[in-house]
Every structure is written in C-alpha cells, then in structure tokens.
Amino acid sequence: MSSKRNLVNELLKRNCLITPDCYEILEDVDDATFDLDRLANALKNELVITAEKLREALQSFEEFLSEGETFESESTNDVDLDQSEMDVELSSKKEKESLDNNLSTSKENETIVAAPIKNLSKDLTRQFEPIGSNIDTQIKILHESSGQTTIDGTLNDFGRYFSSRFKQLSAILRKRGDIGGSFRIGDLKKSKIDDNERIGILGMVTTKVSLKNGGMLFEIEDPTGSITITISAKMQELLVKAGALLQDQVACFFGKIYGDRMVLEDFVFPDLPLSSRTKTVKDPVSVCMTSDLHIGSKEFLEGSFNNLIDFLNGRIDDPYQQTLASQVKYLIVGGDVVEGIGIYPKQEDDLIITDIYRQYDKAAELLAKIPNWIHIIIISGNHDACRLALPQPAIGREYAPKLWAMKNVSMLSNPSTVNIHGKVFLLYHGNSFEDVSSLTPGLSMSDANGPMIYTLRYRHLAPTYGRRSSVVPSLKDELVIEHVPDVFHTGHIHINAHTRYRGVDCINSGTFQSQTDYMQSKNINPTPGRVPIMNLQSGKFHELIFYDPKEDKQ
Image (tube, rainbow, N blue to C red; front, side, top):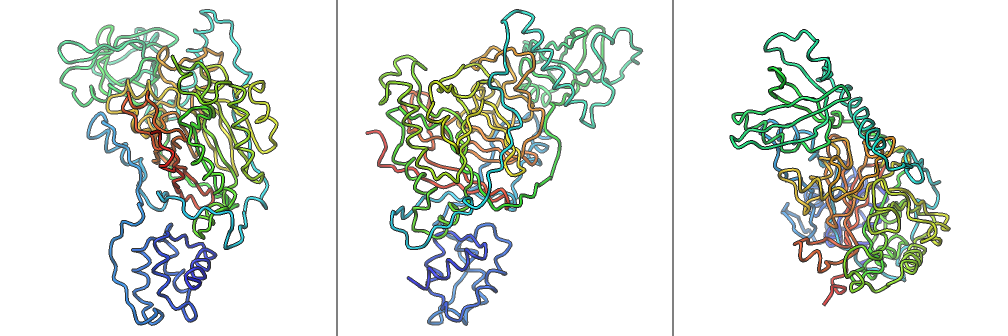
C-alpha cells in the first residue's frame, strides 16, 4: 500500500492527474527503480490519466513491473469520463452543421470526471496544503444591478426599455461581418431599391403567426416603423430555423421587398463571435460551482452538502481528489440559497425551517464551515428573499445579515458579471430558461445546454417579455449580454450540464435538493450533489459527486 501511495503522490507533484482506478495498477510497479519522470513525460499531454492510458504508457516499462507482469491495453468502465453534449433540434442541416462546428468537443479544452468522493475522513494520512491560502483573492465586479434599477412604472418606462434593448442588440449585430449596409424600415419607401435586390433590415419581432398553407408571417419593427415579413411554405429549412425566433427578439433579416412586405430569405441572430481565444491565468487556482441549495426544504441534502464542505477543507484521504481540493480558491453559489417562504401554494408542507430568517441563518452556519481562504460568491435566485423580477438585486441584507457579515462572501445580483484572475464569469440563475425551452423547438428543461446556448445566441438572458419570467422595464436593458464571457454559469434547472459554445464554457451546476413532489409531477429528475470544478490555469474541468443516496426521501 505504501508503494502505491508514494507513486501516486509523485505523479501528482508532476501535475499528472490520475483517476482512482489507476492506483491498483501502480501497486504492481517497483517504485524503487521506476523512472517516474519518463512516465510523466509520456503522459504529459493527457488532461486526466485513465487506467487505459496508464496501461498504454506502461507497455514500454515492463522491466520495472514487479514479478514480470505485463499490461495489455483494454477499455475500462471504472471511471465515467463523459462530455455533456447538446441534443437540440436545429433549423436545418446547414444550421445544425454551423452550430455543431462551434460546440467544442476537444478533450484539450474540457474533461468531465464524474467521480464519487471517497474516503472522507477527519484523520488524514497526508498533509493538506491548500494553494489558495497563499494566493490573494482577485475578483473584479464588472456588472452588478443591485439598487440600480429604478422606474416609475409608466408606459414611457416600457418604451425606453425596449428602445434600449433594440439599440444594444443592434450595436452587437452591426459588429458582425455579414450585416453590411442594412436599411431602416422608415427609409425603405424613399430608398432606390432595385427589383429583386436582396437587402437587410435590423428589427425586433413583435408578432409571429403560422399560416394554414404551412408558411409563416411575422412583423418586425425598429424606431422608424414596422414591416410584415413572410416565409413561403416551400422554404422548409428556413421555417424550422424561424421557429427559434421569439417575440421581442432582435435579429437582422435578409430578403426582397414586394410592395409593403419582405419575402424572407434568411436571418441572423446577434450571436457570439467565432473565437478560439484562450486566456492565460498565472495562478493555478480552481473555481467550484454549485446552485439551488434550497436550505430549509425537507429535500435539502445537508449530509451531501457537508461532504462538499469536508472536501473543501481537505478532509479526504485520497491524493487525487485532495489535490483537486487544494486548488479551489473560489466557490460560486448560483442562486436559490434557501427554499424561501410562499413561493408556491402549500409550500409550508415541504419546509423543515418555516422562518425565512432562520433559513438564512442556517445557510450562514453551513457556509461558515468553508475555510476562509476560499472566497464565496452568492447571487440571488427566484426562491431568495428579494424582488422576483429580473434583474434581481442581491439577497436582502435584512434577511441574511450573517452572510453579509462574512468577510469571504460577496453578495451579488442576478445576473452579475465578475472577473476572476482574468477570466470573465457571467453568473445567471436561469429564471428565463423555462420560457426559452418552451418556446424554442427542440429544447427541453431536462437539458440545460440548449437554453444556455440559445440565450448566448440571442445575446439576451430573457429574450421574450411577459411570460413566466418577469422583467423590470429599466432605463437600460440589464439583461443584454453586451460582453462575451469566458464562463457562463447558471442553475435553476437542477440538472447538471456542461458544453462549450464558441469558446465559452457553459455550466449548469445542478442542485443540493433531492426530487420534490413538484419535480416528480413535471417528470424532472434532478442530479443532486454533482459539483463542477474548473481550473482557471489549465482549463481542466471536473465534476465530483458528493451525493449520498442514503438521504433520499423515503
């Protein structure tokens, strides 16, 4: 056993992250004569070393194996290495190919290690040396909405709000290389447009109607006027693509003008720019992400959450996972810290803590157990004690004074944008995902990748107004995604998901609440206790399982 542990530790010191199933293989290696530098060099391009990769590397090390044992390369199912993939129904083969080309499937960028936490212990067999305790906290708040959204609630407020949305999204669209000289609607009649000339118009969708003949008709507007747009029933690919056009969405429409109508040939969303950019981070620190704790609910998995707390404190007798824990410098909680009061009818039947103040006291009690070298960022969610309409301010200080008093905690609005060691994180609870999923063909609330990607394509966190997610008509639309983030962290859906879209890591960090009766009635199967961890320096992505099935509701 000592031989195995020594080799594991030496590999970890050489930045070789190995999966737990490799330990038994290393037991058969004679550590007294084995050239670990040679092995580490052979494995240097592997983000996470699996048993299969280790066996392949050891093919040329037979002289160092104990008792002359040799290894043959074989597949293993001991560790589940799985990359989350988006499965959405897109507009056409061309549209699907275009989107697929922007979803990174490269293992150089992401690796999910769906590994359960093992050997949680108070008595460690090796000393825990947290990197974060020697590195200063480096957080810059780039955008935060608390206290900034003030309106009188008049019709003029709504007019200014939608005018702001149009201007912001039009500016993003004009930066695209394929827009060119688009027309304003009010200038169409006085402009000299040749017959059959293809033109572009920037507009906001106000209505959309499917016709009996299979075609589609919708109306768009800009500050100068409005125009009706038609899609022929013969344009099947375009009709499917237009299914993703939501009311109040801004896009650029291309087609030909016939009388007072445009016959549509294509359109483009604001979308993210094509990018292969990677930012270099000096410090080898990691960000741990979670959401939807729902403290106060009978289904809150306190034991599983305590497993996470033990992990962050290094109370785990496993070298591989302890190394991951030592790199964690930040914990982000993406909203719904508590279950709240009066969120839905008869909620009191589902509560174990029936007082909102005591719910937040319990949250502070638990989060205080996290070591002070880890900085905690908390945004609000739809169950938290603050305004429900977006953008939501930070959780009220009067409800959670103990959280506000903690020196290593930042309480922010939903959404917020923060810079962590040079990486930009867009933090959003995900309140609008139900609207986006229900209105966009092919999307589902059972897969957060779809709503995450489409809000980035729309460049707006709540693209349609007046549905389930309410929005404050502020002077400036705070929900426009003006700046491209490096990481888009969300919650709300209670199901873990991870993908990359045009260089942006899209992460939904799941929940610490087991399935409720409401979820069961909606056929929602949560993935509790699964926590994403991202190393900012290497870009490596891990997902660890802290869920204890013994906590399941009987």
